[in-house]
Length: 578
Image (cartoon, rainbow, N blue to C red):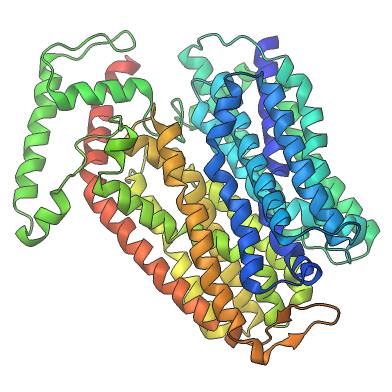
């Protein structure tokens, strides 16, 4: 019992870390002030945002550090990197010290690297302490990373709403304070013992309750995170947000009452194991044996497959093949070329980059989630150019909150899988739909405050879903054991996209400087008017359509593998239950 309680306290600690370390999402809150203090152009400001995203390129360094240092040491290394990266930038923006542009660039890079190190620590904690439900733990905790901007916006209003430099100070200090608070449960990690099927299902119910609480937290921050009233009210609202983050500590008490939950709640839900990553180890092993047609089938979780079941699977597979032969021949070659045979097959980095499916996936992410991230980096200048500078915090909260909801929704397909099954790559395609709609809406009606808010919310929702679902999709398509390397290869598109899309927006922005206003005591220029970002929105909208098309092709090419896997799982599930 004590071990069960401690593992839930670790989960709460990870939630705290994730909730307060998504510090790159509030860049737009202080970017205009940074641009003015440094006296730089929009292109140079964009490079600072790229530097923060480039921290992901060095994410492998955190894994290397874990090979030589304890987990808590790596956690504090990340905290001190953020303290230096953001703290010195705060001194610069407050005119306490003066640094050349290149040093500020490296400070942004250091701060971005700290975020990646925090994420690695959180992933390791979830995987180690929740082996049976590790993906549900990852899904829940990663979602909280999306509320960081809303939390910092609320904290900024509670302290001093008029000082944008305050964000940098909070970015430097709060993660360190949270790391200190999380130290005790991390040092007292329990030993991990195998769980019974009943305990795994009970844990799944716990995660369901925590997801409900997460939704309430997101709604609270959406409604009150952009509060513009007096400081005392903001402090009260910040206290409510902190209470919602501390409230999950009651989960250890729920662990002691798990029998009650099992009898009263569990009968209404059928949650078996991890719901976030569809492909668990046992299902994958079964699926591989069925597809490869092995003549001997070893015991799986105490059960084995009969010859009749194998014949049934082969018969269904043959029928599927006959149906595919009747499809249009003109599309068959393109769809079937280098097609994935089954889910979960391990891909080395060399094999991965040679697959068409990977590049379709890469472009879909590159032209989907990454564009959404670049949009959030430019929110400060977008609001300023449209005359909505006072609404920057509101827009930041909208993007952050809907990104949070999108991340939570990424696990929803697995909760409804028993009644409605759909390939995860299909859900990814659906999640990409709001992005082009939002950009074309912004291009057409950017002067409208309502359109700006709706577009920001749609982009946040879409990109949040993609960020959270990507780990699962990578695991399913290219192997769960290789996901660490393969997913890091995938997210190289983030700094590349940040550079390309950001430079595109900055060049168009600086090209409109004739309409801009010269800032006093600064060499920077502010562009005002709809034209500043009109072409950018059109270009981003067209590129997001390319991502949508690539995602659709990926879904068509992988649907048969998902369908085959689901048939195999359904074939064995009755025997497992027996």
